[in-house]
Length: 277
Image (cartoon, rainbow, N blue to C red):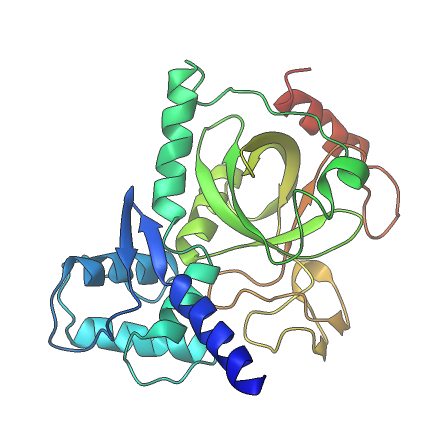
């Protein structure tokens, strides 16, 4: 029985190594990618590392010193064996963070919106947080793409914690910089957004102020002087090295704040705008 379970686990890992990126499919199960190699698969890996914030050079497909150091940084960040080799565990982690799909997802959203003739003003569905979204469309750990309703700019988020609404974090420094460009820096203003998940476009409202965490402290640890003016409490920062301390609030129809446990009418007004109402 133990041998059978091991076989099943290995088979599951291998099957997860087939990755779709930029409209093409790659099988990463057959090779370990290392310094000195050159291939199209390595270029795809470099793009994924770039989405993850550890690779800033041009993706050439050559596995040189820059790529080696970027891989080690990524492995250390996610507590993998930091050997600078891209094997099944590193590929699996890149894939679980949706880093292979970030750019292609944004491209697909742009194409879909353009085909409707509403590149930055398409409307979302007004779905109830409690009965239609929470635990169904969105669960903690999910990653997804968001588009700002007014500017049409897109960025990628991860739902990390939160029950009354979703507390989210940008996946990469690039995503954080896009958020800052939309909000004009970090601030508490509520903006209508469109959330893309499971083939649906959902009307939401988001604030642009990171709070209740510190990027350089362990996740969940009780700390003082949390970001956004929050005092002592659990460190709500789970996505590390993304250029931001703590979480952002993402609200949907009938969601509530965590402090007052009441519906925030300014968020609901922004959600109505994103829904075209």
